[in-house]
Length: 321
Image (cartoon, rainbow, N blue to C red; front, side):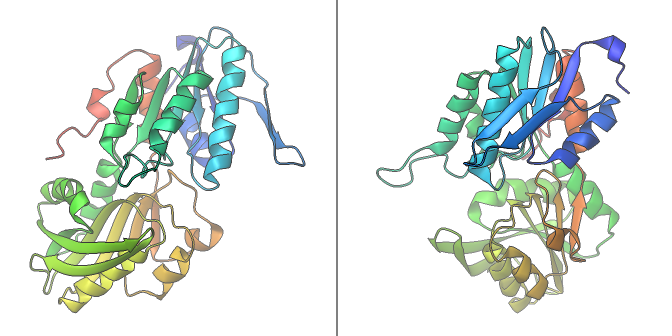
């Protein structure tokens, strides 16, 4: 699709999700940029760019997933190396933007860490950010550089629609996800229900009440990420207890930390559909309940349009209403 005679673009990858980066460059029809990345014995990160990047339009693919602090630092070091090597423009392609849940002061004397990460990226030399499904859309405003915010919704909706699930109802796992769930319900031409939950502590939640009729229906929970899967398990139990025929779930980012794998395997949930913004552990990737869809074509097309200075807006799902 992409001709090397058509411009001077290079795509590099950190170590966080090299398979996704390889899919992206395959879509673009170019090789992945050559780098050497390794750790010193004290865990300091060493980076050397093994391509001539002077005057080139450069993209660095690196989600800031687990181990988040290491992957953020690796991204910053790569960007600094590219800036000092005279790259024309550096775009950070961050399929999963870590620390996004720390986007406001919800109690006294706490940081706004997603803003801090934005400042670090800019200071390192990032001139543009390309990301997928930010936990909070307003994080775009934390940057003083352009941010292209893509949505994995269309990828997920196409898959769900092709499953031909009859009598389906879309479920928001909490009040904060209602906008997202409404958008899914609209595209899937289905009804909507909401789970009212209360969070007692970080990574702990208890489903309290279901707003909507789920009896006899196939419930599909939609969220931007699944972390420890505690909320998901509580939601599944609540929906089945309210008479749902079966429960499925989908999310953009499979954080799936801690006991998530065991919880999903042991639960009554039928399937969990996600994307490859974050690489799955071997155990999860082989779990028959987990289905992974690729966002490489979405990111690849966005990269191509950014490089060619053409419109990216048609890739945005701007009708989330």
